[in-house]
Amino acid sequence: MPNYKNPPIPNEIISKLREWVKHLEIIQSEWQLELSSFDKIIGGTYLLGSLVNLDSDVFDSKHSDVDLLIIINSEDPIKILHIVKKIKKESLQLETDLRSLLKRRKNIPILSITIATDFEVKEGIHKNRNTIYAFSAPQYIDLKKENNQPQGVGDVLKNDTLTKFFPIWTILAKVQEFRCDYLYLKKLINDFNDQELNLPKDILRNIYFLKCIEENSNFSPISDDDRAIGSRYIQQILDDDKYKNKTEYQSLINLLQTHRPNGIGKRSGYEPVKTEDQLLIWEIIGQRAKNKLIELHTITKNSNLSYASETVFWELVKMKSTSFRAVGDSIELYSGKDIIKDNLIPLYIEKHENIECYEFNTINSQNIQRSLSIWPENIKKYLDSKIEQNAQYISQAKIGFAGANFSQVGTGLPIILKIRPLSYWTIENFNNKIASLPNNRELKELRDQCANQLLKETPTEDFICNFPSQLFLELALITKDGIIPELKKNSKHSRLARGHGGPISTCGPEFGFLWKDHIKKIKGKYYLDIYNCAKNALHKELNINIERHVENLSIHSICIQDLHLNSAVVGIAKLNITFGDFLNILPKNGLFFEQGVTAIPINKVSDRIKEEKNLGSWHQTGLLRLNLVVEYFDSQ
Image (cartoon, rainbow, N blue to C red; front, side, top):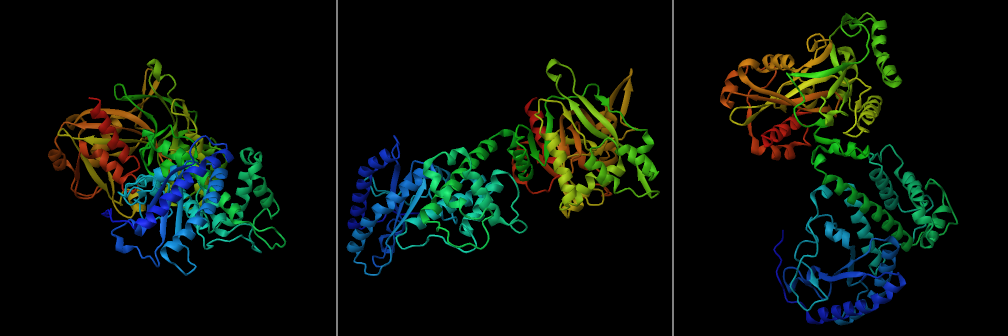
């Protein structure tokens, strides 16, 4: 941040400015009556720029601007328009007085006035987008006081506004910039009368951006006609009762209704869009962008999403499903106390075809079609198109996630997992293709429809999963001396690593449940065998003997992996060996993991999650598992 000094201010200029501010204080009572407002309209008037910064030599009486900031206490578009017009009128005499005082002859305006709302100042949103300290730096002199000590007037621009909500910040900065241009006494903007468009391009494009923000959709200016969409959307906005039933908006509504509905095309004889009308449209855009920013800030403060990646955050916002907890790229359907008893989880097995429809060495189209009959028509149609009759293909029967029954947990009854057999052929052609072909429009639409179906529920309800989702056991390891090992999955055995372009991090094994190996029947009831699956995974990937090296095994979460919609039961394997012993046990062949393991102490986990949640450098549930370890130890 710059180091601002407290320079001497030319007395004549400062006196003249303070006189003008006192004049505004008197006449704003008239504005309050005109606007039926009981609150003071002007929150503060400040001097800034070359008269304040660094030293008095910076101000050039022949060429320098006199920069003012006026903070207003209104967010209503009509009131802001009214105030801005009044301030412009009152600034004419001040401009004349300053011109006389500084003996300026050239017809170049001296005054440069920025009007910012109280909200914009508190949020640190400034028309100059080159600094986050625009309002917080001590570079403002309060013209209502006799003290010339520079001060800050607002806050530093919030980090999530700058990053996560960048489009909203851009719109609000553009609104403020237009106010400043409108106030400038040498015209920077003009009435608009174009043969092709009904509003200036900049306004139409920002309305389009607003539409994308309000609908939580992606910006596609290359494929979409953003100007035409913007024109239609502003008319849609103004058709709302909040605007169309107010007389103050009628002239603007009538003006836009006389133009073409798509905003583009040859026209003649239309009334021009005056600068005041353009300003009112900008203020409408700004008010709606502000409301969306407030909504998103509220959501961001929700601890459920504080560790979510940007992708997952926006997906849950779009679906209005922000009551789910997400960490990194995984979304939890359940999170809480250990759900296994005697190393088992109760199961409900959905009705299914004979197992040869899921486990085979040669493709039989009739069998595959029978296995696909349970899926919705769009998934069935897509998968049916991928069948190659009589092709050689080795497909194991995996365990697929079909849902979960949480509704009776509060009464002390266990969670029941719903499962179905799932062929590896289906997983390969659906989930894995979704992950490896992210730009395929058909797959993306299928994936989004599936996610919306599952995540539109609330976390207190039972879940039904009606799309292919392979179920995995995914564990975080914690050593006896409190270290979580960070392992690097190599691209030979990790599709995610291949997609990432290099090794990705994990903190334990990820192992797909097998239908023939991990379902246990006891007294006529079925259970998911967590112990044997963990035993297989730990031994195969890490050379860990579950009987000798594992002190405790617990499952605390059921989640969906956002990228490909596979699912996992997620937990912790607490080891009875130190980190050093763990390193000695690890296989040296590099089959599953790269050489070199990083130690993550418990007290560093939260920082790691914050740093890496958007990098895509961890397995989909890796950061979630790290977080579970912290919670598990906190509960001890």
